[in-house]
Image (cartoon, rainbow, N blue to C red):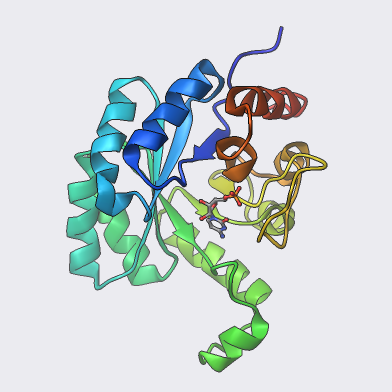
Length: 233
Ligand code: C5P
């Protein structure tokens, strides 16, 4: 029998207000257990929304992509643990990741490293002074992330298989850019279907517009869950 939700599905609350975000979670109901709050909602009560979702029994991924000196990242991470969230992103630079890992000690918060923003291509990385192209920089940073003790990384479905092959199974790969077959791609460039992303090695899928902009978000989420359940965890 198929389950209502799938713990590997994270729906992005990319909406202009926490009221609209909360309404979406009520509309979606039992079909989704995990939500992502990003920088759009952070200054508008994102941490209160996090607490409210946790009190309602949901899991929360805070996509804040911290990047600062180690002392500040450690203290910010410690403050963030007070919201009870499950996942937090930081940029995958070793001093940043080590500080975040120290800051979440004693809590249930887990840290994800963002390797290379998907908005950067090889030419932009060269212009910024990096000696690596995007693929090589992603792999180098995954290795560093695991050495720093983070709990996982954010990567596209296209990178996931190679990352699993090289570095094994003992960490999360959280994958955005998910589009059910036939869905509008929008501004995403390297997309995969839910089943494809899971079979490439993703442990969690981040889905935004295919659910939060759907005419029937609950049905859209249920359809994605049904597809995900064809790939066992
Ligand atoms: O609407 P869509 O499904 O494209 O939303 C994807 C979500 O994942 C957005 O919240 C976006 O900011 C986030 N994300 C991404 N690519 C990354 C990291 C995060 O699309 N590399």
